Image (cartoon, rainbow, N blue to C red):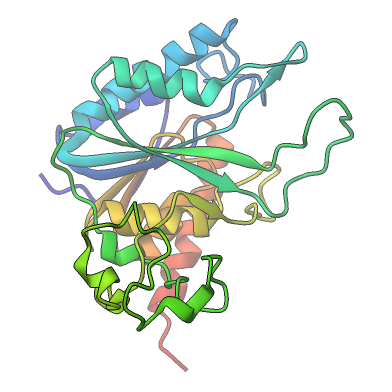
Length: 291
């Protein structure tokens, strides 16, 4: 069954049942954080009475995501932490470990570094400027396009932090990490260039992305630059991307721009209207002839 791009208004626990099994290529989402914002709806996620109940809510929704996700599918899950009564709760890792216990395979933890993080007046601890993005797969064999998100090489550039800098390139036995790389004939025969992919190095696990803004929204939105590598690596062109906490629709916007389809589920009717307006404008812009 083909699933066209759409926005579903409702609770993810029940709304996802409208989708057929095994139809989604990848899920990119950021659930409401624990005790962060009250949307005045008793079905909402984030206002549970305890951290354990919050974790249970996420696990429950992810179980329905498991049904609609293809065997080759992945989930990219963004979560921020929470201080409660001066204690850091460790919510991202509580959720990640709980999902692992229910059968999801945790493949990577990614640090989202926020260079424009909000300043804090706190004087008893460092100011947070990061959140987590977790990559889960449904099975051990899953779709992941590493080439689509490669980064520029650093080793032979002015940005290199390696002892000796670029002076090792082209010199026999020029490898500084003699013990670690012992046995790698390319490196020790001064052929460092053969050890590096021509398209760039493999994506690292610290992503520096500024906070997202959307003038209609009175809340922080998913930064498109944070979503792009998830969609590019997690789905083929024409694939289907799901966000069960759609908000202002940024995942749908990025998916459309990258040639993918999307399904968004959002509980708040005002946000659904906002997302649909935003997505309609993107479609118009993409259809406009090039000047």
